[in-house]
Image (cartoon, rainbow, N blue to C red; front, side):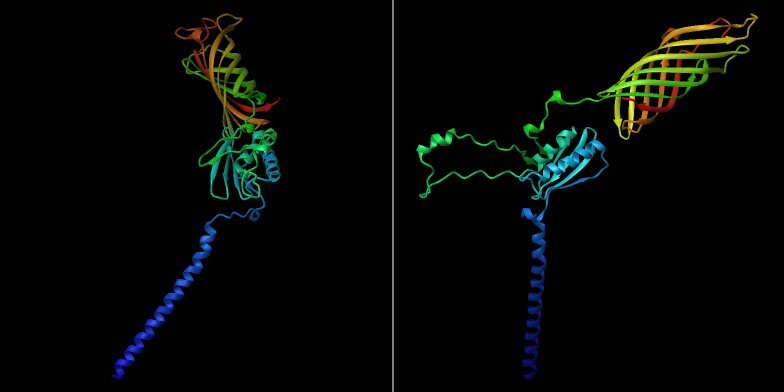
Length: 357
């Protein structure tokens, strides 16, 4: 009997301790969960942040950095912007990409093409709508009398600030942020360059060396170019040549093409036409030797790769293919005792160029 009572008391003691431990465990869980729930909710106290934070994830050029500093000062002067907004500015092929996250978790992304639009765009993305004014009422809770209605109707309403609707994935710019098309500034660049050149042609084959120079005007990604190449010497290879043979060539041409920005590189694709003057000489049966000059036209297609993309001094490598229509399908020679002229030639140029305007 006594043993049974002792067993029941032991069971009650264990149960009471288990219940106390369970209650303590649940209290600890509630204490830990409370701050987590509070942290998950975004802060809505405007005084918790001292202004929108702006960061640039990539290196921007000087024009965009200056515009970004102006935009920060502009936002600091506004009273109705989200002071807890987070703004990231990244480089884009058309300008910069702006990503905004507001305190309530809404996000928006927009591409800005002109540095002058950056301040207005950031303001439109971070603006907090003002609450609508309440209708005036008298002591009885009714609205103003009809006698005051004409006076209220004649009083002009102050203009309300336009702001964008921050929907996920899309932001409509405010009307005043869109500049007129006529006000856009298109920059014109003038560039000159020079460097050594190598020439190669086949059937028949020639290998030459010389120097080249070019001058171009670029506007709105269109490129107009003039080109000069001097072949100091073209040596025939893989063919029978007369004694004392030597060959020189001058090329002067113009081309039109497009410039593509592959930052930090620039790629120019050009089509053009050239005037060619060739001189060949050799010792022959005539004591005075044989030789003469030859002139014709050629069509060219070329690519030029230059770096860096910023204006100033650049380094380039260019390749040009020349096709001579007058030599296709037939043998053209300066003299019967001299080798045939090539119908197709490839020129490789490399060197430096400078922006002069």
